[in-house]
Amino acid sequence: MADLARERIQAVVEPVVTEQGYDLEELKVSQAGRRTLVRVMVDRDGGVDLDAIAAVSRTVSKALDSDEAESGPFSTSSYTLEVSSPGVDRPLTLPRHWRRNIGRKVKVDLGQGAVTGRVTAADENGVTLDLAEGHKSVAYRDLGSGRVQLEFSRSSGKNERQG
Image (cartoon, rainbow, N blue to C red; front, top):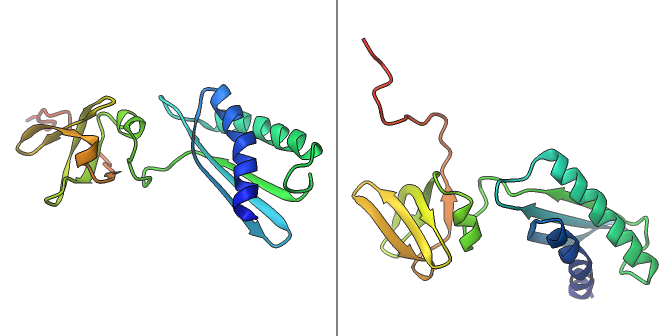
């Protein structure tokens, strides 16, 4: 029954999110006592700010309430909706994840072990990484999931201390 409710909720949520120009990155539906917890994670090129999260939340809530009135999976007052965007700890698994992280330092498994490098390009076929030994283009099928590495300060490549 839980899978059926999730499918029904996804059928309502995904078109609304997509129509607003976002990708539905994740949808989790779980029970929290008598209430249903609906967690929606959205992203888009250029990122998502708090105003966008609020707008998506309002629109998704209206869509769920409207669907509920037509025999939805839970009563109108018995769900909690949480809308967020992915954090930097989200694994990079899809081409759009890699594209959205061009310029960032990542750690990824290339089959023979994990490497750390900077994403310099990404398209529908693969990603180009700037590694210590030079640039390397890798097809997505040869990549494990990547993780963004936090950088608190990034040198421009010039000696920032002078004199």
